[in-house]
Length: 192
Length: 128
Image 1 (tube, rainbow over the protein chains, first blue to last red):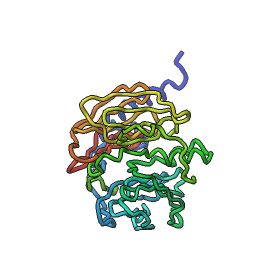
Image 2 (image 1 turned 30 degrees about the horizontal axis):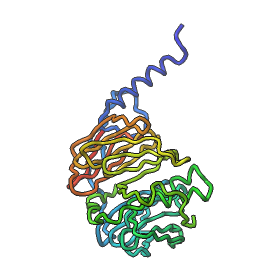
Image 3 (image 1 turned 60 degrees about the vertical axis):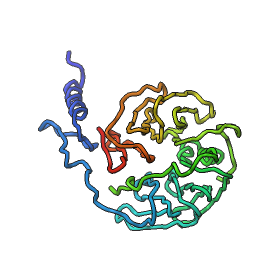
């Protein structure tokens, strides 16, 4: 007896095999069975379509919001810029930091971002995105935050205590080390 | 949310430099990247559960995949490794990008995270 749905299973295997061998595969659309599947190289994003020049100094970090509607970027010029991703117009410019902003993270619901800055400011700020206002400010003695993965943890841990864990995951670095070695190249800026 | 310190992973005397860190999307793991070591903590208990050594290179950045199983680590010089978080097994290495002087970051991209994308001193690289 032929197992149930055997043909469907075999055809699915064929598709999976095509996808595994397709070098430029970049779509979640299921391939058609009418022709052998193979993605063309020019479907792949290889050329910049837009250049955003709103920062006045090196861009150190950028991240799309979880729902993809906004893009936030941080820079050595001490500001954070938030863009709308349909038009790439600036929605907000956040200026409170007093040193280059090294990293940022979006909250799971995209209503807040947390940002951290370099010496001598050494602070982390939580911002409300809708009103573009800094909600909370924390200063840490002689710390340089390389990274804040703050509110990523609060998705699975809804209690307030967990959100604070995130704040402290930017760990204190040895103050003896030179900050100058943490330069981030301008070339990491890319708009899709 | 009031900025109180909840946990300090290292003592006051520990003079270590954390190059990068990441929390897995499922909230279970915290990966800490030191120059030649990778530390994996259980985020619920803050216990260190794994420690991996990498020789001859300096690790600069880490990204975790959406399924929380794999991590992508960029290293000086010119190397990226895809490793499994639980076992530390190196699944693939990537070369071709240039990373010598600056912090270069790499990331997963594409539909279903098929690709690895990395910056490079001079250009942007994709690897399938």
